Image (cartoon, rainbow, N blue to C red; front, side, top):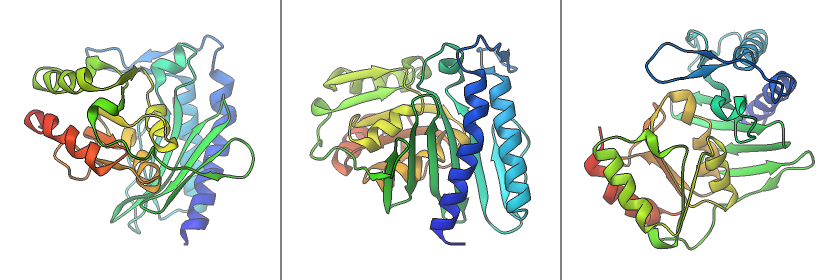
Length: 264
């Protein structure tokens, strides 16, 4: 299938997720805790969205694989895998904050090649084709978006991470060194931080401990908008782990100088 057809289907999946997400947002939806020492919430919205999207993929593309946060992986028979995070930012979701997003990506043997980041409550949808183009739609025709131009130095950059508490030991030391230099620091944005980078607001996003579904949808949108997104060594980040996204190659390189000693 063409990228245009695949992106249209990805948007169809996002359309299906919207009413489920909105049904549970800001209505006191309870959250269950996943196993582990740190509170990692999951809600009926997470489960319901992933169940619905898996069903649609199975009905329309039965040979495609599915990798999602809430259910076991379905292995592809054709080299194509849909990577789904039904609600990225569940902590924000249960707090009533509209920084969570529905994340949908299509990956092949080359990695994530197109994606959708959808924020149903404010009606913003970001779409992207890797290394080609990215768009924002607010209910009308999509408009092309680009990263902010000309930011090459850390002291000119707007920096974001979901939570500085993501970092420990050498990671925390490296992040703190960058944060002290950054012109502006904004925390708690979840997936929306990457969308804001593609839109030309934020210049640098640094995170750690991500899963494949936490990052797959960011790659086509960030690179499609002209940005750079890698792991802390400068390699592919599609498997998750330590991730850095930047609005320019120069800014990305400057961040890597601080981050490389803390790579795992």
